[in-house]
Image (cartoon, rainbow, N blue to C red):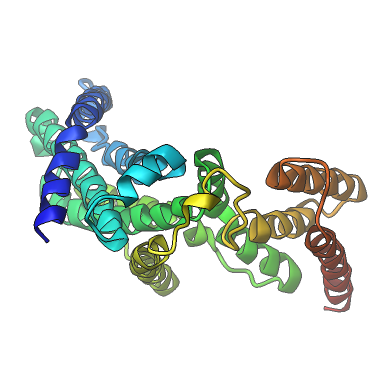
Length: 328
């Protein structure tokens, strides 16, 4: 425990320059956005600009895990870090905690800067709503942070980790879109994109703070998806700690064959996007893109049998879906 505390303090001190840069840039962007949203000629139509805080926390939730855990994608660094008298679970917890502290401080200071920037126009806003907004978006931002942390740590290289995070930003949205196209669900499924709950909560509190629509409430389905993303965040946190214990030095820099990466997402995006365009030419181009994706995945032009089977199954699935669509 003593060694973990010492490493935590050492690592927290090492990220202070990065924290200072993030804070200064975020505050400047927040103040400029808030001041630009004020309308001198029609102040009652001024924008409370909560959205800029959501952009900041969304950006940090995606980027900070990459800064915190990219060090573990270097064999030289990994040998040194894993030789420390600290368990791997403790190492993961330290980096998760330090990353969260950075996100928390930048978001908090930026929120305070936004509040201060609105004081001269306070009579046109109900700034009380900045409090529930702050805690709601902080909670959702933390869930996103945990999810991106888990996804990034499943890769064996930093570049693959970034690509994995890009995949997981929209893959659940594409799955719901696919089933909507297939079964005509007539459901508004925007909440399935990873940043959608933050956007929904932001709009809700912006309307209330601007005294536009105090009766607006979330749909029941929105509340379900917000809860789902929070649960996924908790599971991702646990998954990061548990899987990090089994991270192997010899796998660093090698092909990232995690099920959460290319293995799942290449066929998923191929099938879902093909259903979006529903065109032979588009299908051919998407198939070419899928094959290129496998080349990138395998880092060469020789595909494994599993890759070919995955492509064949994807085409079979598309044929089955087209038959289902024709029968419905």
